Image (tube, rainbow, N blue to C red):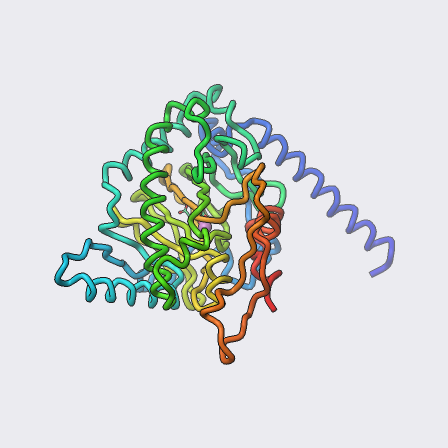
Length: 384
Ligand code: OGA
Ligand code: NI
């Protein structure tokens, strides 16, 4: 290719990047997210949301192919039933064994009989819905890209970094160790957000105990490591999409957390990558989805895996989900020295040398949040 021709091509790419940036800003400046587009009755998905084959950066099956394998496989369901005294030890062994298998094979499982009443789950979904369906002028006041200083609304936290925007808006806040002061939380969701995040914190303790045992560690090990100390709660709203085949709800990604506890409504759309095929996570009333994040993969030295997942959009909606990311403390103003996480020593041996170096979690999270969700996970940076 002649030099001048090459320059012209580069020039065209720059122009198109520039016009994309203008469109992204215009969309962002509305502060009304995808819900705003749907309220304005757009008949077509705007350009910034369209996935083209040449912006699929992955080797994974393309986001443009929304089909799941249609297989009968489903992620394992773990019954956390409170063991009665006589059967306690055997029941616990069974639960721990089920979790171990799920974490090695899928990185995902669903829990039932987890102790959070169904009424609270339903009300949490409703609380997220009420917020996203508030009067636009009220809702706008919460719109910000700062996800750690208080309650926020944002559409696509990686809007300016991903190859294509996703058909989704998100509200949320850091919910542990402390929620923002109650007066900063919107009425539409305040009470249930406080209650739900408390319940999730409790449940996460139990799940981290079971995970510790599943790794062959003392039950308290992961809790003592602070794996559940911080919580980021996100309430996603996936509006009905006029052209679901051209965009994505959440592009395929792994979570940065230790574990994520996910509540979804009955619409469906979440898919998990299993043996290089997408498998639907069928909504199950009253259940919660648990998945492992990159930090758990790191401390488990790859014994347990953080698995890619995505959400495909639908013509029907809205779909609502609530993701609670259990993660270390990394908030603004933390004065303690930054925690560092590496493979847990008890899991290492001559046959099992560390596959990660120690990671400073602030650095880990900085890498996580300075990239598009569609780019490689920060785990790669810390591989030996
Ligand atoms: C996430 C996520 C899935 C969903 O927030 O990281 O994967 O169903 N959400 O909303
Ligand atoms: Ni996720």
